[in-house]
Length: 412
Image (cartoon, rainbow, N blue to C red):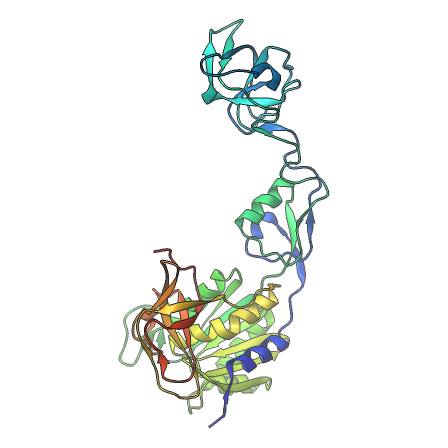
Protein backbone atom coordinates (compact mmCIF):
# COMPACT_ATOMS: atom_id res chain seq x y z
CA UNK A 1 0.00 0.00 0.00
CA UNK A 2 1.25 3.49 -0.85
CA UNK A 3 2.32 5.62 2.12
CA UNK A 4 -0.02 8.34 3.29
CA UNK A 5 1.11 11.83 2.22
CA UNK A 6 0.38 14.84 4.49
CA UNK A 7 -2.31 17.19 3.17
CA UNK A 8 -0.07 20.27 3.17
CA UNK A 9 2.62 18.52 1.13
CA UNK A 10 0.13 17.53 -1.56
CA UNK A 11 -1.37 21.02 -1.73
CA UNK A 12 2.08 22.62 -2.02
CA UNK A 13 3.10 20.23 -4.81
CA UNK A 14 -0.05 21.01 -6.78
CA UNK A 15 0.27 24.79 -6.40
CA UNK A 16 3.92 24.63 -7.47
CA UNK A 17 2.83 22.95 -10.70
CA UNK A 18 0.01 25.37 -11.60
CA UNK A 19 0.63 28.67 -13.41
CA UNK A 20 -1.53 31.76 -13.63
CA UNK A 21 -3.40 32.26 -16.89
CA UNK A 22 -2.83 35.20 -19.21
CA UNK A 23 -4.61 38.54 -18.94
CA UNK A 24 -7.50 39.48 -21.21
CA UNK A 25 -9.72 42.50 -21.80
CA UNK A 26 -13.38 41.81 -20.95
CA UNK A 27 -16.54 43.91 -20.93
CA UNK A 28 -17.34 45.27 -17.49
CA UNK A 29 -20.58 43.28 -17.44
CA UNK A 30 -18.59 40.04 -17.69
CA UNK A 31 -16.01 40.91 -15.03
CA UNK A 32 -17.85 39.86 -11.86
CA UNK A 33 -15.68 37.41 -9.91
CA UNK A 34 -12.61 37.94 -12.07
CA UNK A 35 -9.27 39.29 -10.79
CA UNK A 36 -7.81 42.56 -12.04
CA UNK A 37 -4.57 42.13 -13.96
CA UNK A 38 -3.75 45.84 -13.81
CA UNK A 39 -4.71 48.74 -11.61
CA UNK A 40 -7.47 51.22 -12.41
CA UNK A 41 -7.09 55.00 -12.01
CA UNK A 42 -10.00 57.44 -12.03
CA UNK A 43 -9.77 59.60 -15.18
CA UNK A 44 -12.17 62.19 -13.76
CA UNK A 45 -13.64 63.21 -10.41
CA UNK A 46 -16.60 61.31 -9.02
CA UNK A 47 -19.05 62.96 -8.79
CA UNK A 48 -18.02 65.32 -11.61
CA UNK A 49 -19.91 68.26 -10.09
CA UNK A 50 -21.17 69.37 -6.70
CA UNK A 51 -24.71 68.08 -6.17
CA UNK A 52 -27.34 67.77 -3.50
CA UNK A 53 -27.67 64.75 -1.22
CA UNK A 54 -31.29 65.63 -0.32
CA UNK A 55 -34.52 66.84 -1.78
CA UNK A 56 -34.93 70.39 -0.51
CA UNK A 57 -33.89 73.94 -1.29
CA UNK A 58 -30.55 75.21 -2.53
CA UNK A 59 -29.79 78.50 -0.79
CA UNK A 60 -27.14 80.72 0.75
CA UNK A 61 -26.32 79.51 4.27
CA UNK A 62 -26.02 83.11 5.48
CA UNK A 63 -29.70 83.69 4.66
CA UNK A 64 -30.77 81.07 7.25
CA UNK A 65 -29.07 82.72 10.22
CA UNK A 66 -31.29 82.45 13.30
CA UNK A 67 -33.97 80.36 11.59
CA UNK A 68 -36.07 78.04 13.80
CA UNK A 69 -39.57 76.55 13.74
CA UNK A 70 -40.81 79.52 15.76
CA UNK A 71 -38.92 82.13 13.72
CA UNK A 72 -38.56 80.76 10.22
CA UNK A 73 -36.81 82.63 7.44
CA UNK A 74 -38.80 83.28 4.27
CA UNK A 75 -36.95 82.97 0.95
CA UNK A 76 -38.23 83.59 -2.56
CA UNK A 77 -38.26 80.44 -4.75
CA UNK A 78 -36.83 81.32 -8.17
CA UNK A 79 -36.62 77.91 -9.89
CA UNK A 80 -37.17 74.16 -9.68
CA UNK A 81 -34.18 71.93 -10.48
CA UNK A 82 -34.48 68.21 -11.15
CA UNK A 83 -31.64 65.67 -11.34
CA UNK A 84 -30.16 65.47 -14.81
CA UNK A 85 -30.77 69.13 -15.63
CA UNK A 86 -28.07 71.79 -15.68
CA UNK A 87 -28.95 74.86 -13.56
CA UNK A 88 -29.50 78.05 -15.50
CA UNK A 89 -30.66 80.29 -12.67
CA UNK A 90 -28.34 81.52 -9.91
CA UNK A 91 -29.32 81.90 -6.26
CA UNK A 92 -29.15 85.47 -5.05
CA UNK A 93 -29.57 86.99 -1.58
CA UNK A 94 -32.92 86.01 -0.05
CA UNK A 95 -33.55 83.41 -2.77
CA UNK A 96 -33.78 79.62 -2.99
CA UNK A 97 -34.19 76.97 -5.68
CA UNK A 98 -36.33 73.87 -5.17
CA UNK A 99 -33.90 71.01 -5.88
CA UNK A 100 -34.08 67.22 -6.16
CA UNK A 101 -31.49 64.68 -4.94
CA UNK A 102 -28.54 64.42 -7.30
CA UNK A 103 -29.17 67.69 -9.11
CA UNK A 104 -26.16 70.02 -9.62
CA UNK A 105 -25.71 72.85 -7.15
CA UNK A 106 -26.70 76.15 -8.79
CA UNK A 107 -24.38 79.14 -8.75
CA UNK A 108 -24.66 81.25 -5.62
CA UNK A 109 -25.94 78.39 -3.43
CA UNK A 110 -23.66 76.90 -0.78
CA UNK A 111 -26.05 74.71 1.27
CA UNK A 112 -29.26 72.70 1.18
CA UNK A 113 -32.21 72.93 3.55
CA UNK A 114 -33.87 69.50 3.50
CA UNK A 115 -37.52 69.65 2.51
CA UNK A 116 -38.63 68.23 5.88
CA UNK A 117 -37.35 71.41 7.59
CA UNK A 118 -39.27 73.79 5.32
CA UNK A 119 -42.85 74.97 4.62
CA UNK A 120 -44.12 76.18 1.26
CA UNK A 121 -45.61 79.67 1.15
CA UNK A 122 -47.86 80.63 -1.72
CA UNK A 123 -47.76 79.35 -5.29
CA UNK A 124 -47.16 80.71 -8.76
CA UNK A 125 -45.18 83.91 -9.25
CA UNK A 126 -43.62 85.11 -6.04
CA UNK A 127 -43.79 81.68 -4.46
CA UNK A 128 -41.79 81.42 -1.28
CA UNK A 129 -40.55 78.92 1.27
CA UNK A 130 -40.21 79.16 5.04
CA UNK A 131 -36.94 77.61 6.24
CA UNK A 132 -37.23 76.44 9.85
CA UNK A 133 -33.59 75.57 10.52
CA UNK A 134 -30.26 77.35 10.35
CA UNK A 135 -27.98 75.46 7.95
CA UNK A 136 -24.19 75.78 7.76
CA UNK A 137 -22.19 76.11 4.56
CA UNK A 138 -21.91 72.74 2.80
CA UNK A 139 -24.89 71.10 4.53
CA UNK A 140 -26.19 68.19 2.38
CA UNK A 141 -23.86 69.12 -0.49
CA UNK A 142 -21.78 66.41 -2.18
CA UNK A 143 -18.63 68.11 -3.46
CA UNK A 144 -17.13 67.37 -6.86
CA UNK A 145 -14.60 64.57 -6.37
CA UNK A 146 -16.03 63.73 -2.98
CA UNK A 147 -15.95 60.01 -3.85
CA UNK A 148 -12.91 59.84 -6.12
CA UNK A 149 -10.56 62.52 -7.39
CA UNK A 150 -9.12 62.57 -10.89
CA UNK A 151 -5.92 60.48 -10.97
CA UNK A 152 -6.76 58.61 -7.77
CA UNK A 153 -6.02 54.88 -7.68
CA UNK A 154 -9.35 53.08 -7.69
CA UNK A 155 -8.30 49.41 -7.43
CA UNK A 156 -4.93 47.66 -7.34
CA UNK A 157 -3.94 44.66 -9.48
CA UNK A 158 -5.06 41.41 -7.87
CA UNK A 159 -8.43 42.77 -6.73
CA UNK A 160 -11.23 40.24 -7.04
CA UNK A 161 -14.20 42.06 -8.52
CA UNK A 162 -17.43 41.87 -6.56
CA UNK A 163 -20.64 43.72 -7.37
CA UNK A 164 -19.49 46.83 -5.48
CA UNK A 165 -16.26 46.93 -7.49
CA UNK A 166 -18.23 46.72 -10.73
CA UNK A 167 -20.33 49.68 -9.61
CA UNK A 168 -17.27 51.79 -8.81
CA UNK A 169 -15.66 50.91 -12.14
CA UNK A 170 -18.83 51.97 -13.93
CA UNK A 171 -18.75 55.27 -12.01
CA UNK A 172 -15.34 56.12 -13.48
CA UNK A 173 -16.46 55.28 -17.00
CA UNK A 174 -14.79 51.88 -17.37
CA UNK A 175 -16.53 49.82 -20.05
CA UNK A 176 -13.86 47.12 -20.19
CA UNK A 177 -11.28 45.88 -17.67
CA UNK A 178 -8.13 43.82 -17.96
CA UNK A 179 -8.41 40.69 -15.84
CA UNK A 180 -6.77 37.29 -15.56
CA UNK A 181 -8.61 34.81 -17.70
CA UNK A 182 -11.01 32.49 -15.90
CA UNK A 183 -9.98 28.84 -16.26
CA UNK A 184 -12.17 26.75 -18.51
CA UNK A 185 -12.69 23.68 -16.33
CA UNK A 186 -13.77 20.42 -17.91
CA UNK A 187 -15.75 18.02 -15.70
CA UNK A 188 -15.97 14.32 -16.56
CA UNK A 189 -17.79 11.55 -14.72
CA UNK A 190 -16.88 7.93 -15.36
CA UNK A 191 -18.49 4.56 -14.75
CA UNK A 192 -20.88 2.08 -16.38
CA UNK A 193 -23.10 2.35 -13.31
CA UNK A 194 -23.91 6.03 -13.86
CA UNK A 195 -27.24 7.18 -15.26
CA UNK A 196 -28.00 10.82 -16.09
CA UNK A 197 -31.80 10.54 -16.16
CA UNK A 198 -34.66 8.10 -16.38
CA UNK A 199 -35.37 4.91 -14.44
CA UNK A 200 -32.59 2.92 -12.81
CA UNK A 201 -31.80 -0.69 -13.57
CA UNK A 202 -30.34 -2.96 -10.91
CA UNK A 203 -26.77 -1.85 -10.16
CA UNK A 204 -27.18 1.65 -11.57
CA UNK A 205 -27.00 4.99 -9.74
CA UNK A 206 -27.61 8.56 -10.80
CA UNK A 207 -24.63 10.73 -11.67
CA UNK A 208 -24.48 13.36 -8.92
CA UNK A 209 -20.76 14.14 -9.06
CA UNK A 210 -20.74 15.88 -12.43
CA UNK A 211 -23.65 18.25 -11.72
CA UNK A 212 -22.13 19.00 -8.31
CA UNK A 213 -18.64 19.64 -9.74
CA UNK A 214 -20.04 21.86 -12.50
CA UNK A 215 -21.93 23.83 -9.85
CA UNK A 216 -18.81 24.16 -7.68
CA UNK A 217 -16.81 25.46 -10.64
CA UNK A 218 -19.55 27.95 -11.53
CA UNK A 219 -19.93 29.01 -7.88
CA UNK A 220 -16.20 29.74 -7.80
CA UNK A 221 -16.64 32.22 -10.66
CA UNK A 222 -14.90 29.99 -13.21
CA UNK A 223 -16.10 28.61 -16.55
CA UNK A 224 -17.43 25.03 -16.37
CA UNK A 225 -17.35 22.75 -19.41
CA UNK A 226 -19.49 19.62 -19.28
CA UNK A 227 -17.52 16.67 -20.66
CA UNK A 228 -20.36 14.23 -19.99
CA UNK A 229 -20.23 10.67 -18.67
CA UNK A 230 -17.61 8.21 -19.89
CA UNK A 231 -18.32 4.50 -19.83
CA UNK A 232 -15.74 2.05 -18.54
CA UNK A 233 -13.79 1.92 -21.79
CA UNK A 234 -10.14 2.92 -21.60
CA UNK A 235 -9.88 3.97 -25.26
CA UNK A 236 -13.07 6.03 -25.01
CA UNK A 237 -11.82 7.79 -21.90
CA UNK A 238 -8.50 8.55 -23.60
CA UNK A 239 -10.35 10.05 -26.59
CA UNK A 240 -12.49 12.23 -24.31
CA UNK A 241 -9.42 13.43 -22.43
CA UNK A 242 -7.59 14.20 -25.69
CA UNK A 243 -10.47 16.46 -26.69
CA UNK A 244 -10.61 18.02 -23.22
CA UNK A 245 -6.92 18.91 -23.27
CA UNK A 246 -7.48 20.84 -26.48
CA UNK A 247 -10.29 23.04 -25.15
CA UNK A 248 -9.92 23.20 -21.36
CA UNK A 249 -7.47 24.90 -19.02
CA UNK A 250 -8.00 22.24 -16.35
CA UNK A 251 -9.80 18.90 -16.17
CA UNK A 252 -11.62 17.26 -13.28
CA UNK A 253 -12.52 13.57 -13.42
CA UNK A 254 -14.37 11.65 -10.73
CA UNK A 255 -14.16 7.93 -10.12
CA UNK A 256 -11.74 5.21 -11.17
CA UNK A 257 -8.64 6.51 -9.37
CA UNK A 258 -8.07 3.81 -6.76
CA UNK A 259 -6.28 0.50 -7.31
CA UNK A 260 -9.01 -1.88 -8.51
CA UNK A 261 -9.04 -3.89 -11.72
CA UNK A 262 -11.85 -1.72 -13.09
CA UNK A 263 -10.23 1.67 -12.52
CA UNK A 264 -10.27 2.66 -16.18
CA UNK A 265 -9.61 6.36 -15.50
CA UNK A 266 -6.32 5.51 -13.85
CA UNK A 267 -5.36 3.30 -16.78
CA UNK A 268 -6.34 5.99 -19.30
CA UNK A 269 -4.50 8.76 -17.46
CA UNK A 270 -1.44 6.55 -17.12
CA UNK A 271 -1.15 6.62 -20.91
CA UNK A 272 -0.33 10.31 -20.71
CA UNK A 273 2.48 9.50 -18.31
CA UNK A 274 2.37 12.75 -16.36
CA UNK A 275 0.16 11.98 -13.38
CA UNK A 276 1.08 10.94 -9.88
CA UNK A 277 -1.20 8.82 -7.72
CA UNK A 278 -1.32 9.61 -4.03
CA UNK A 279 -2.96 8.38 -0.88
CA UNK A 280 -3.49 11.58 1.09
CA UNK A 281 -3.63 11.45 4.89
CA UNK A 282 -7.23 12.66 5.06
CA UNK A 283 -10.70 11.17 5.47
CA UNK A 284 -12.71 11.34 3.26
CA UNK A 285 -10.95 11.85 -0.12
CA UNK A 286 -7.81 9.77 0.44
CA UNK A 287 -7.11 8.78 -3.22
CA UNK A 288 -6.02 11.54 -5.60
CA UNK A 289 -4.42 11.71 -9.01
CA UNK A 290 -2.78 14.91 -10.21
CA UNK A 291 -0.54 15.93 -13.06
CA UNK A 292 -0.08 18.43 -15.86
CA UNK A 293 -0.73 17.13 -19.37
CA UNK A 294 0.18 19.45 -22.26
CA UNK A 295 0.03 22.37 -19.88
CA UNK A 296 -3.39 21.35 -18.54
CA UNK A 297 -3.68 20.44 -14.83
CA UNK A 298 -5.65 17.21 -14.39
CA UNK A 299 -7.32 16.24 -11.12
CA UNK A 300 -8.43 12.65 -10.71
CA UNK A 301 -10.94 12.88 -7.87
CA UNK A 302 -12.44 9.91 -6.00
CA UNK A 303 -15.85 8.63 -7.03
CA UNK A 304 -17.71 8.76 -3.72
CA UNK A 305 -19.62 12.05 -3.94
CA UNK A 306 -18.57 13.47 -0.56
CA UNK A 307 -14.95 12.49 -1.22
CA UNK A 308 -15.18 14.18 -4.61
CA UNK A 309 -16.46 17.42 -3.07
CA UNK A 310 -13.85 17.44 -0.29
CA UNK A 311 -11.08 16.71 -2.79
CA UNK A 312 -12.28 19.60 -4.96
CA UNK A 313 -12.25 22.00 -2.02
CA UNK A 314 -8.80 20.96 -0.78
CA UNK A 315 -6.93 20.53 -4.07
CA UNK A 316 -8.74 21.68 -7.21
CA UNK A 317 -10.30 24.94 -6.00
CA UNK A 318 -7.05 26.44 -4.63
CA UNK A 319 -5.21 25.51 -7.84
CA UNK A 320 -7.97 26.92 -10.06
CA UNK A 321 -7.98 30.13 -8.00
CA UNK A 322 -4.23 30.42 -8.49
CA UNK A 323 -4.73 30.01 -12.24
CA UNK A 324 -7.34 32.79 -12.14
CA UNK A 325 -4.97 35.19 -10.35
CA UNK A 326 -6.48 35.09 -6.86
CA UNK A 327 -4.19 35.99 -3.97
CA UNK A 328 -6.41 34.17 -1.45
CA UNK A 329 -6.58 30.63 -2.79
CA UNK A 330 -7.83 28.77 0.27
CA UNK A 331 -11.15 28.91 2.04
CA UNK A 332 -11.12 30.92 5.29
CA UNK A 333 -10.87 29.05 8.59
CA UNK A 334 -12.37 29.93 11.98
CA UNK A 335 -12.26 28.51 15.47
CA UNK A 336 -15.65 27.32 16.66
CA UNK A 337 -17.02 25.67 19.79
CA UNK A 338 -18.01 22.04 19.28
CA UNK A 339 -21.76 21.70 19.82
CA UNK A 340 -21.27 18.01 20.72
CA UNK A 341 -18.56 15.37 20.83
CA UNK A 342 -16.79 14.84 17.51
CA UNK A 343 -15.58 11.29 18.03
CA UNK A 344 -13.04 9.49 15.86
CA UNK A 345 -10.28 6.89 16.16
CA UNK A 346 -6.56 7.46 15.61
CA UNK A 347 -5.63 6.43 12.06
CA UNK A 348 -2.91 8.83 10.96
CA UNK A 349 -5.37 11.01 9.00
CA UNK A 350 -7.00 14.41 9.26
CA UNK A 351 -10.77 13.91 9.36
CA UNK A 352 -13.07 16.44 7.71
CA UNK A 353 -16.63 16.37 9.05
CA UNK A 354 -19.44 18.30 7.41
CA UNK A 355 -20.85 20.82 9.87
CA UNK A 356 -23.24 23.70 10.18
CA UNK A 357 -21.52 26.72 11.69
CA UNK A 358 -23.57 29.42 13.40
CA UNK A 359 -22.69 32.62 15.21
CA UNK A 360 -24.03 32.25 18.72
CA UNK A 361 -23.51 34.85 21.41
CA UNK A 362 -19.88 35.88 21.07
CA UNK A 363 -18.48 33.10 18.91
CA UNK A 364 -19.01 30.38 16.32
CA UNK A 365 -20.62 27.05 17.18
CA UNK A 366 -20.25 23.99 14.92
CA UNK A 367 -22.49 20.95 14.82
CA UNK A 368 -22.60 17.88 12.59
CA UNK A 369 -25.06 17.83 9.68
CA UNK A 370 -25.54 14.05 9.82
CA UNK A 371 -23.96 10.76 8.80
CA UNK A 372 -20.34 11.41 7.80
CA UNK A 373 -19.97 8.40 5.47
CA UNK A 374 -18.41 9.37 2.14
CA UNK A 375 -21.45 8.18 0.17
CA UNK A 376 -24.02 10.14 2.21
CA UNK A 377 -24.38 13.24 0.07
CA UNK A 378 -27.54 14.46 1.82
CA UNK A 379 -25.50 15.62 4.83
CA UNK A 380 -23.57 17.94 2.51
CA UNK A 381 -26.44 20.21 1.46
CA UNK A 382 -26.96 21.92 4.87
CA UNK A 383 -23.21 22.12 5.63
CA UNK A 384 -21.43 25.45 5.46
CA UNK A 385 -18.11 24.17 6.78
CA UNK A 386 -15.75 21.25 7.23
CA UNK A 387 -14.58 20.58 10.78
CA UNK A 388 -10.86 19.74 10.71
CA UNK A 389 -10.33 16.98 13.25
CA UNK A 390 -6.63 16.14 13.76
CA UNK A 391 -5.45 12.58 14.33
CA UNK A 392 -6.50 11.34 17.76
CA UNK A 393 -9.69 10.64 19.65
CA UNK A 394 -11.64 13.67 18.45
CA UNK A 395 -12.94 16.86 20.01
CA UNK A 396 -15.19 16.97 23.08
CA UNK A 397 -18.32 19.11 23.32
CA UNK A 398 -17.44 22.66 24.34
CA UNK A 399 -13.87 22.44 23.07
CA UNK A 400 -12.47 24.49 20.20
CA UNK A 401 -12.57 22.98 16.73
CA UNK A 402 -11.01 24.44 13.59
CA UNK A 403 -13.47 24.79 10.69
CA UNK A 404 -12.91 25.53 7.02
CA UNK A 405 -15.84 27.66 5.92
CA UNK A 406 -17.65 26.78 2.71
CA UNK A 407 -20.17 29.59 3.10
CA UNK A 408 -20.87 32.49 5.45
CA UNK A 409 -22.32 31.37 8.80
CA UNK A 410 -25.81 32.63 9.69
CA UNK A 411 -25.94 35.07 12.60
CA UNK A 412 -28.46 33.12 14.68
